[in-house]
Length: 244
Image 1 (spheres, rainbow, N blue to C red):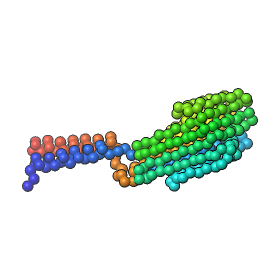
Image 2 (image 1 turned 180 degrees about the horizontal axis):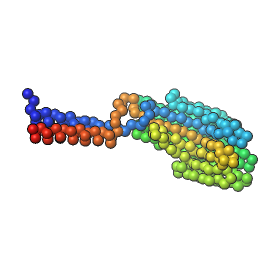
Image 3 (image 1 turned 90 degrees about the vertical axis):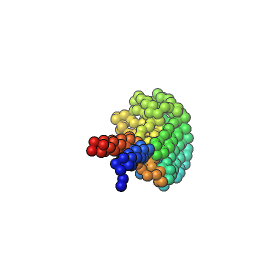
Image 4 (image 1 turned 30 degrees about the vertical axis):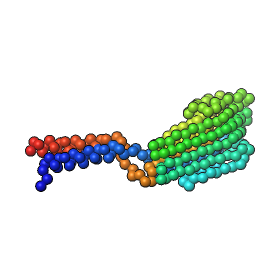
């Protein structure tokens, strides 16, 4: 027959194991599988220019590299090759994306032009989070003959006001509720008088997920709370048995 002290020791051991088991569990991302997106240019319809859907567009899954040799559409014009690439590994729960172009010209309306070079947006994601960067080697936006020089290799979310044109963010970065990181090397929002259109150059998104071989568990804080509650229950049981 099992004695009261023996049962107490068994219950206490089980509670301790439960607490440790829960507290050691990693806090995985909300995605169930890794994902990634990349494209070099996109634009809303503005002035006499038609809207430009994301291009060249690569998504993971399935991933791969998409290229366009030269481009003249909407506000964009270039003889350079536009390249977008995505990849991932569900076994590890990782993903990656990149979008590049050597040179790109912009025509946003009468007297509104721009030129950027060395565009590169990248991101990498694991089950523990994502990092990325969006840079240009050089760039200029010109409004009625007045140029605004853009900062090269700008820190993330560098805001630039271009008089008479709109607001620009260099190396724009944000993370959504699922842990997916979005990076834009250049994001221009035109003034309402110019249609309020969005122009994006160098766009990537990355999100990691639990590795395929891992079993998703509650996060660390929940585990610690659960373990504490279990321990408190056992201690209460021990106290009551001793009183009895």
